[in-house]
Amino acid sequence: MAKPVNKVMTAKEAVQRFVDDGAHVIIGNYTVCTCADLVFEVIRQEKKNLTLYSQSGIFDVEVMVAAGAVDRLVTTYVMRSGGKGGGSAVERALKDGSLEIEDYTNFNYSARLMAGMHGFTFVPVLEGVMATDLFRKRGFMGEDKYRVITCPYTGKELVTVPAANPDVCIVHVQRADRFGNAQYWGAMGSVAAGALASKKIIVSCEEIVAPEVIQSSPHHTIIPAFRTDAVVETPWGAHPTEVLGHYNLDRLAYGLFQQAAATQDGMQRWMDEWVYGCENRAAYIRHYVETFGDGRLSRLKAEPFYSAPANYGAAFSSSWNAEGREQYMGIRRGELETIMEEKGLYHGA
Image (tube, rainbow, N blue to C red; front, side, top):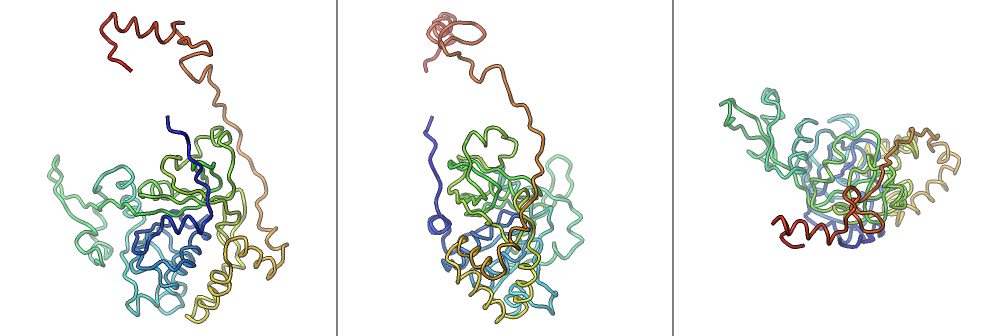
C-alpha cells in the first residue's frame, strides 16, 4: 500500500499549482461555508478566462466576476442584489457582454454533478423542465444544455443533461487531516458531488486534525484522501458566511459588501481593501479586527453543541491476529496457502 502523502500547503501554493487560466472551476460549497479564502486567492493571482460552476452565486461569484476572472458561468442562482435594476457585478457583466451564463434548476445542476461523480456521460432529469424557459433558452452550451432521447425500455421521451466534470473544485470544510480526508457537516446541497465530480480538489478547512480524529467519525468524511490534491488550513476561511460549529453569518460584513457592490466603483474599492489589500486570510482577519474590533468577531463564534458519540467498536480490525494466525481458523498464512494449493484454489500472491 502506498504511503499517505502530506498535502498541506498554503492557499497561494494550491491555487498556483492547480488552477490554470481557462480552467473549469467549481465552487463546491452551497450558500453556507463558502470557500472565501480560496476565491480571494484565485482573484489575487489574476486567473483569467474561467468557466465557473456555482449552485449558489453569492458574494463569491460576484467578486470573481468583478475581478474579470470569469468568462462563462454555470449556475442555478446568482445574488444580483436589486435584480436587473440593482447593483451587481454579474448584472453589469451580462449587460456589457463580458459574461455568458447558463442557468439550470437546482435539481438539474446537481444531476450533472452526480453524473460526473459516478462516471456517467449524461443522466435523465424530470421532463417538466421542458415547459420552462430554462429548457428553451440556451446560452453557450447550445444544444448540449439539454437533449431529448428515447428511452430504450419504454419508448418514452427523456430529457437529459450532460455530466459535469470541472477541472478543479475549491471547497471549504470544517476539518481535514494532512493527507486530505475532508469532513463536512451541515447543509450538504451538492458539496460532495461537486468535489468528487472534479478532476482536482483543493480543500481549505478551519482546522487540520490528526488522522485518528477523522477515523473516529468516518460518517463526516465527504472527500477521501486519495481524491484530494491540496489541504489548506485557514481559520475563518469562509467569512463572512457561516461555518456550522465554528461561527455564524457576519451580517454586518455581508451588508457592507452588498452596499459596496451596488456600483462598479464601490465594488472596486471593496476589493482593493478586502481582497487585494490583504495578502492572505490572516491579514484579512487582522484588518477586520482593526476595523470593527475583536469583540464583534468573537460574538460570531459558535456556542458548543455536540452530537452524541457513536460506537464504531469491533472485536478486531484484521482477519489476522498479532501472532499471524487467521482469527477464525487459527492457522498461519503459509498453512492456508498450502491448503488452497492442495484443493487447486491457489494461484499465487
